[in-house]
Image (cartoon, rainbow over all chains, first blue to last red; front, side, top):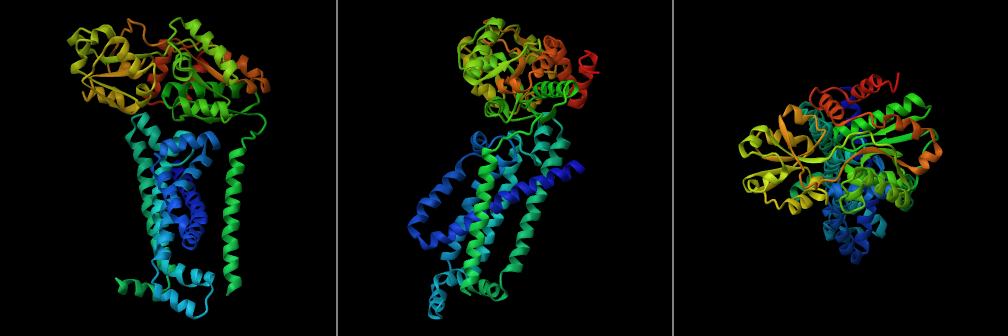
Length: 207
Length: 304
């Protein structure tokens, strides 16, 4: 049981770090793309292509650069998380009603202020949805990390398959599924906390 | 207001920058602490056992610390990691080196095969093969004993007429290696009804449940005993010899020359039957790898 907890923690940390890095890079990138629209198409295309690379192949390729172990896994999780995060940031920001932007400009807001005080808060639900997708996907992909020497619950799943020990497989798979469910719920709560009340009501009525 | 926005931007830029630096540093890194040897292994029981034995030997006879990275995904992962320096050693097979890595023609003479891979690996990759453990874990085809009786199968050539009614199950590596499926079909002129790819650990259940009729098997698989499978003789000698031996980085041997003598203690200590027995203990009797390895080393007087 200790082992399961330790591996779960490891699994979660690796996933979170990968997604956090993708967020740190991806959200600003998404914002940047709204300013330089011409970049959007190539960047989106690039992240889509990354997404189509099978995770095992990605790990094997990256392993030649970053070696065995957790680093390679985190880098691939970072890459896979880019698409949902960048895309959601970009479309979320663009989805803000033009009328609101007009109002902001009318109030004398600078470009930066428009982004941070108007667009981002309104787009927050969409951005957070992107994060949720990224994190849940990352938890799933992280199970394969064991093949290149990374840690996580994949260790139990893999060894269980090899030794035909179904209990072991479940000891790895069930916590992984639980992790995914819990982080999804956790981020949902975060969304509740972060989105201003006024905007929430507005989102509902806008539908 | 403007100051706050600028600060947030700066913060994000800073975090991203640090993250990138960390990643690059980790990538370029690989400065191993002194006195640490990293032992790897492939992802099947026998190789994990060999890795564990080598690790325990090193720990027993030197002051070196051993870091185990066992159960890695396949030959290529281990080989690439060894070349890169993420691993110092792992156990590989002469046949695998010859055909899958060097992509050469099969050599049936075991000594010649060993010498060929030794020379090539020394020159091309700066890796050295130490003394073989003794057993020949060659690829084989295996069928349930009843099936062998039914179709009167003794050798792989006997399959030619009945292959059309049989389903072959094998793991991914078998289908991807030149010394596997493709070569086998070509050499024996076999035409199976269909093939199924599956995990090594699932093959035996599949053949028991009659989902497949014939599987590829390793000569030293413990499950051959349990599942009552018969190995078909490789009468055309298609499969190369697969003698296992420690494969070590030459610079690791330079750094810790005592490793060569210590790992060579295992030379010739394991024949086919003994290796199969050890595999059986882990796969079928569900014993712990570390325990089985330790008991074996104790029994042979290699550690005390």
